[in-house]
Length: 233
Image (cartoon, rainbow, N blue to C red; front, side, top):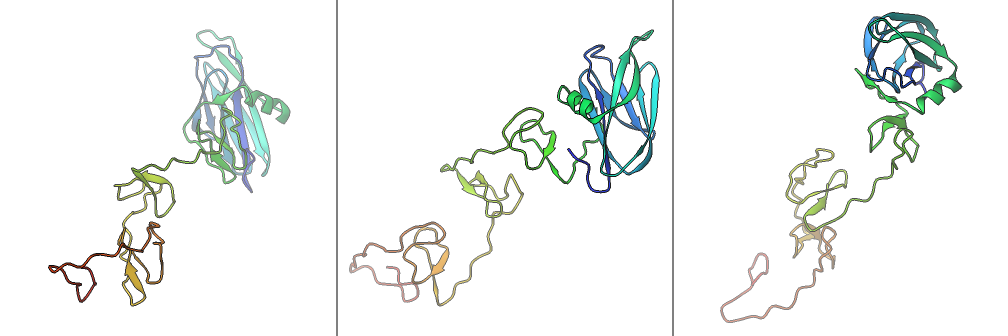
């Protein structure tokens, strides 16, 4: 990811396997951001200026940085031997080392997963990735969705076009109502002989369902006559 305009992006990374199940709590300006275990990371989008970062285990390790807009910062949680549980030390690393560490880690238990304007969630693992990538940089899944199958029991949503169950009143994808406003009857329209929707009188095929409008000639009998309004026998 890259930081949004006017913001700075900060990663805190715990790249080592040692003490894997021991959680390190991470705070920014006194606010709890999340916890890490072995090979986990957290991230935050922050305003430029001074910020206080603290990593907490058996001890508390603090660091203050004056952030600049448009820059990405990497903090490493270095694990140390403690009396009762692991201690930690928070250190800043350069971008190349930081990105190398990220490749080996997954997102930790973050209290708030930030959504950045130029990112999107992976359709497989849900982690934020650049909006223009075709494969997730976290799990490798393709971001190209397979076309949804059309079956006798589905129909396209009238709003988003995705396939939904034929009897639902609201789309399961976008929530749009599937009840269309009644189409007006005018001198230039007629009902489709198959679906009943109004179509232009000269159409030979319905623009809604595609049905042919050419009916087989009906036979007159002594017991039938055409309706003077609709013409049906």
